[in-house]
Image 1: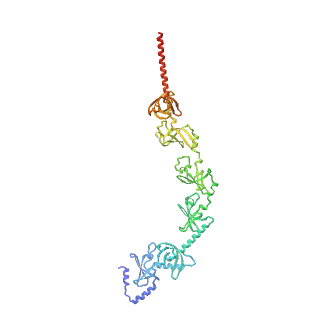
Image 2: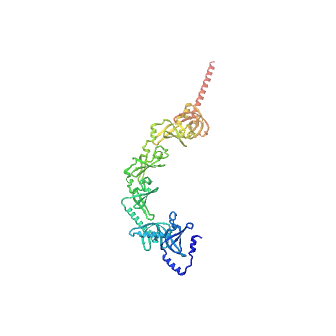
Image 3: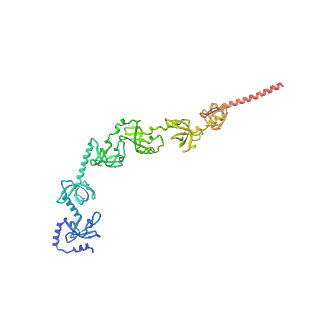
Length: 555
């Protein structure tokens, strides 16, 4: 049997009705009284302590009431502690050390309380009753009526932290009433006063940067925090606030809006400063050369700072004359100072565009100073397309069109060249206005027409198969791969309607144009040549026969 069981057994003594009645009256008088108790026993296993309070029976309390915040026992057997007598159960007193501490804390508070001062507490709601809530602060229980709580009756706020102000103190009843509503209404009035002041301010007011975020920063103006969105920091447009401000900085702001429902105050820094766009026409003109600083670099271009809260955009295509710029960071660094040309001022949309390359010499002009049409150069093939190939010479690319690649009309650049090949070409045109360079590979090779002209002359007889039939004549392909035109009137004695494709025709050369690669032939002329030769041969035979006759006669 445990000590606690023995105590319970020993206390089961019979008493007369009169003794019980007298004792109950005495006990009722002591109920809720702060009395002194003595710890006469501690049982760690059952987590209980036996407290003697001058009654025939001892009280039992949980050891949790005697532990500090770290869980250690603050007292030991024999220590005297204050307790509150809460009542009796089966003649055993019910006491609380926790209530005694609160009672003593309340007594100390009431002794120090000065009704000429204002007391604001930060506490936790520990209980909810019909009339309101119990708010505990520093070990003291304060009462907050429901009408002073600003809390919905349907909610369960137990455990919620609240701030309240003491509105009534009854020292005799040892009760203190607090109000959360009073503080909230005061705060509303204070905020409204600040909002009215900001709204009616004729000049920007000074605030202090409290917190910086990715979407803006919070600024304290007179005890209320407002948000300066990152789009309201500078006339340049949306910016990263961390690049311009630090927490604790003082800034000039104006109020944009206040949402009473959300209690959201919107502020602006840029509206507190002169707008440079109002006088942009007096500051800049298209074509001006200005000095700027690179402030941000993106894959599509760079942003440059002009000062005066102005920013311009330098597109990637305006950085260099090189058309193969992969990323602006290959040419620029943040903080670089540059001379640029203003190429666009869009006052309505508050947009400035500048160019770096327009202040640099055009590569095509430098190229034209070094090379001229007719020059033979070497280059590297950078790309091959369906219509030709691009060949890089120095820092510029020229186009080698398919028709300038080979004299063989059936061959294209992709049949002959590949990327990376070094090729010798002839410059046939430099167009500085359109920034185009035209190249030729076949111009360095002997043309079929030139070979043909070396082996043929006007009057020579050629043979070829019909390649194409037109209304004005037919084209035949001769042995050297040259197309020769036989006009309709030169086909006699052949008739164009009776000629078939691939039919072999014999004709006489009447014209060779090496410059334009043209050959003309005539069947009609060949026939006449044949007739003359036949007649010549015939006349030759007739003269022999006449001589023989004369000789015979002379004999």
